[in-house]
Image 1: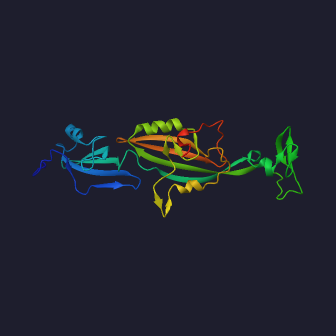
Image 2: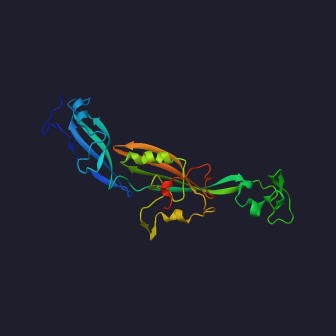
Image 3: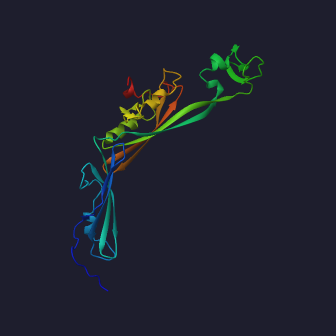
Length: 268
C-alpha cells in the first residue's frame, strides 16, 4: 500500500522539544538536539537533507557558546529523517578549568641511589656504615654487621615513592596546546607549564582551596623541581581542542642537568 502523507510536509528541520544543555562543573557545555524532517524516500536520505543537517562548527540554535561536534541522520520507512546533532562549548572564556586525577606508586631503585645513602645508610668507601662494602669507590653489597640496627645484610634496593597526575581541559585556543607541546619533558616546581596551572584551581572545596592537595607533598630536595610534564595528547571536538596530559612527581627532584625547567612557572 502506498504511503499517504498529510499535514506539514516537513521540508525543513523541525527541532524537537525536550532538548537540554549540560555543564559538567568544570565549564564544559554539551548538548544533544534532535530534528525531524521529511526525506522523500523510503530507503535513502535526500542529498538536500544531508546538506541541511548541522555540520561540525555550526552554532547551536539556542546557545551560540556551543558548536556542532557531530551529526547522525537516521531515515525510517515513514518518510522521515531523524537528525541527531551533538554540540560542545565552553561556559565562559576560552578554556575550561582543568580536571585532574592523581595516583600514588612506589618504584624499586638501587639502594646506592638513595639520597641519604652516604649520610646514614651505607656511607662511602673508606667510611662505610652498617656493613656496606665497596670496591674502587663503588658500593658492592651489605655484609652482616652485628652493630647495625636494623641489620642491612642483603639489602640491594629500596622503594621510592612517586606520584602521577593525569588531567585534561578544553580550549578554543589552539596555541595553548602548541605551547604545552614545547613544554613536554620540562620540569616545574609549581605545576605551571606554558603559563597554565595544570594541577587544579577550582576554588574552595569544604573550606580548602582545591589546589592545596599538591602543596602538601613532601619535598626532599627543594633545589630541584619535583614535577615533570611527561605526556600530552590533543583531540578535536567541534571548534574546541581537548588537551590531555600527564605529570610525573619525583620526590627527590628531577636532575636539572638532564631536564630543562619550564620558566613560565618560576616564582609562581
